[in-house]
Length: 116
Image (cartoon, rainbow, N blue to C red; front, side, top):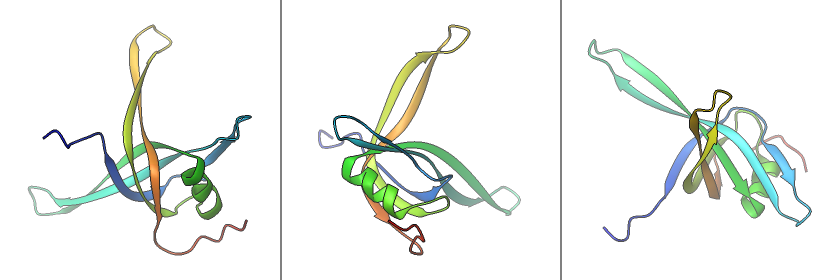
């Protein structure tokens, strides 16, 4: 099992237009929330949809693709890794912020109407 590593693959839709940050170093970062949906049947045989929300960041080339071609509701696929960062809340309790750092982006669904 030595070949297993921190890898995440998701297909979903953007919750809002991505936030783009440009840094003096020339780096570009795109930050956004992404929803993935799963469907299953419950004990009564009813179809249930379960939505999971993910915090996602992408840098440089992947960020530029996201900035140019996506908008709220865009369907995309991403490949990346999980990252968790500790922080203290207002009451001093330790919490963790978990996000996916995307290094590959696949544009899915209809073409975006975003113009360059």
